[in-house]
Image (cartoon, rainbow, N blue to C red; front, side, top):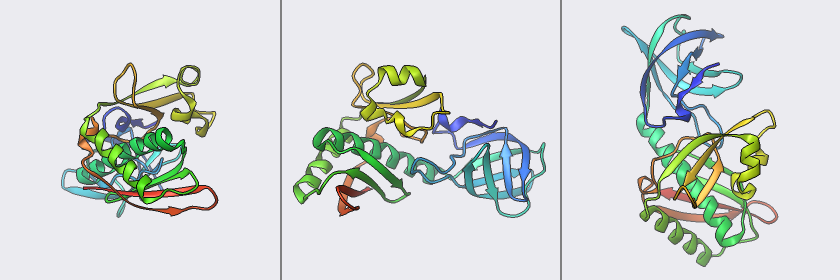
Length: 239
């Protein structure tokens, strides 16, 4: 099982690891990795693996039974020690957008009782789907103002693991959305925003995040679209 270091440390962008196996000719499995695999609406990291004078471009990262790093060209041999370098700008953009999405989910639930039903992040924009009839222009302005107030408050962001039974017994199910996780997952990663005693948001998430809401930067809500009956999509960008 690959040690998924990105779960504890979202800031490291260079590390050493050993190639455990190669699947096909281009899917490298490492003993540990900081590369984030596609999941939870967050795209995969890109970067390179290198050893000596050889370099392999990492074009995709997938999580199946193991974490696979898809490389261009023939992969390094099992047993090879490699240096992994992550595209730090792409990772930071995804982390900023992911934390902003958590704020948006919490604001929509607090202000409109609108539960998040899906999201997709990119390096330059994001969207969030929620259960709500229709937002108007005043609603969108309210959402944007609340988001930027939370950014200005520079709330701390933290993450930790919790036994699933304890999480289900002690945490707010509307915010943690534990019911969305497969029953096979018995330990969940919780991301909290705000004061530890009374956080603004607390939810189950395996994505990468910034250390505080001030790191997100200014948020602009760019519009909304209808996504079927009683569902809305909110689009936003970070400056």
